[in-house]
Length: 79
Image 1 (cartoon, helix red, strand yellow):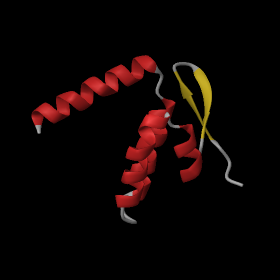
Image 2: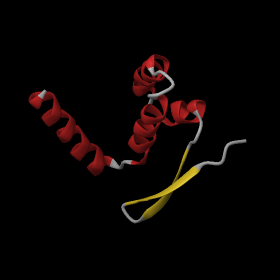
Image 3: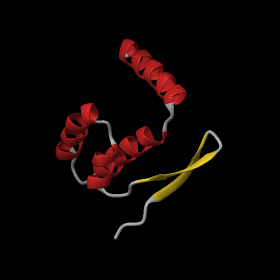
């Protein structure tokens, strides 16, 4: 059985899933289809980055999500 990952976010220790099914189950229902698509489209060279992205999303709290959303919007406007 895979050991969960542990990290510190905003001064609190949190456990994060370390398997594809675990990450998917931890996501809100409305994010799972996007996760499935990203995992299924990733090749062997990209899969680590894709999984890292989704794990980090699980580690964010609401204030961090707002910052991330603003950064993504800024990136879209620049691109």
